[in-house]
Image (tube, rainbow, N blue to C red; front, side, top):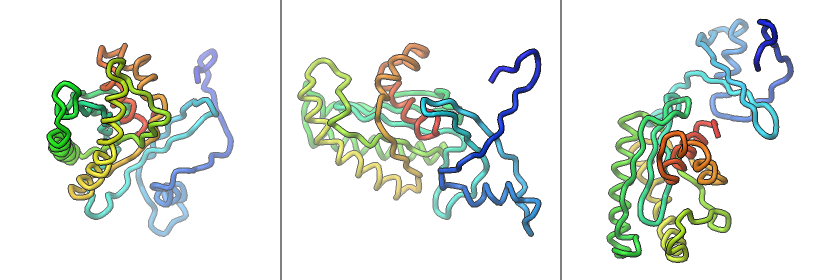
Length: 227
């Protein structure tokens, strides 16, 4: 909030912590002066304004669970699954785009349709993506698609694309889960609501990228709790 006449504005009130991850460590950090072994670390705080009110985010270093090699502390990698490709966008911890690219699934396209070849391409892409996420040390974020709500972003061949996407998405989701478990990559599954619509109005215009890469960016941001 902007200060008036150079004075700081102070907001006071109770904070209800609803996210379970790191809650115990956060409590120890707040109560550090009373604990036998105080937790000494800096805690960053961000106040976000949403339609339902104001939210407070606390950032602190969490110890990595044994066997896992990624986190969302430095950013995330979002994936947007489509009828003929997977769009990927890597962001930093603030949700800013580092880079974006797509993995072609030509076997699932209408022009070069070969469903088995398309699934093979999809498996290879997922393997490469998971390896990249582990190398970067960043979590993967995908959508929990509800086809009754999510409309196809493609205007041509809409019925075909929706059919192929519905058939392949189940295999895609399970393949991502298995690969992330095998490669020790943390996977977050988020609500898909309004990703494409908001991407078109924001990141697509700002960065000159197509709607699918924009959606992948917002999926990553949603995994970070920024959208």
